[in-house]
Image 1 (cartoon, rainbow, N blue to C red):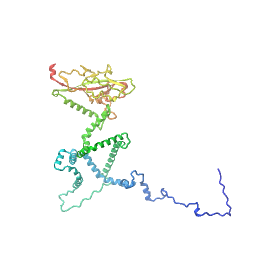
Image 2: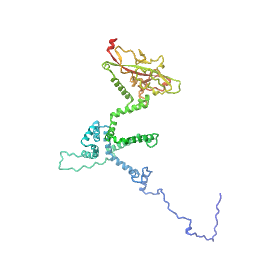
Image 3: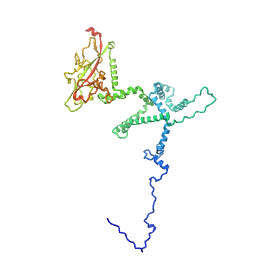
Length: 499
């Protein structure tokens, strides 16, 4: 490390003075920083602790309502208290609209509003003819401009003071003062706070419901090009059709559709059935009966059975209506046999025995939920100690007597099969007892007892523990299945006389 040697200056040396212009020493300049001072004022300290200046994404060069005041806890507190105390009329109006739209006050209350809207639209053909006949076409839709006057008149008439008989008509009392906003902590104030809470939750639910659709509109999804193409095509299609569209009918349909959608019958019956139908067309197999909005597909299946019965009843002849009718049943039994394939799925054999025998087998065997590739369902897989492929008794051990090729058997004297209908599978599985299974409902809410979409009920290797979906443990141990078929018979006295 080098050292610095100081030079010794002689005492008789005179130091030269430099000119001011060439003075290399610069004067001291005051440097101002944004750091807070050591002793801030109380007002500045309070502002620094409560006012924040984050980067506002809505900041604009023009004055906007959302950026009028800076973000501040005191301002937020004051405005929130004022808002809670004064937002009551907004929620009152919201409750009245909900009562009308959701049929809360009965069909008469909502029907009056629908009739009033229909009157403004004048969409009824007879009413439109009368309007055209009297030269008033297009007058009623313009009555929408009088709605604000009707609202103001209704408010003033409903709040008009009614004097009591004891008061003198010549003496006029001074008008009552307007009630102040509810004080903080009162019942009305807490009701407003509860309404704000629920409105925030409803808005969040609506946002979460619509947010999955946003990527399809902002080119974050592969379907954006398809949506854009359909939008342009529909736009070009509507251009020449616009003069042909009746605006009165259009606005009437658009205005009445929410009332139809929110009707209790639509919400409780029609929508669950539509969702069950869509779910059944997408999800094949036993999972198509999953619970949807509190209505299981078993109700949907029951309605399909009733509809099919109505169709069969319509095809009956007069001799059937006048005769006594009963139902007979058959039981179809099959066993699953695994194949040497390494796949863990199943395959289903088509019901060749049912083809051409009057059976309504639907889309086949009804085991699409089991997949393909590892085994087969067949009546030929039944063991010698098993029940017969077709049995009549519910115990499953009494074989069918008579000719099995066309699935007919001898009936009691005087009874005959209804000629206008065939065999129908019991797709509801009503013969399965809930007590015969270990658990009636699975973890997903779907019932484990009953039949699948085509009437099959799956059991273990010994024909026990009936379920609508087979267990994975049965793959190695073996499993069986049964299906119940029903057909109606009628009593014909002529058959007794002939015998």
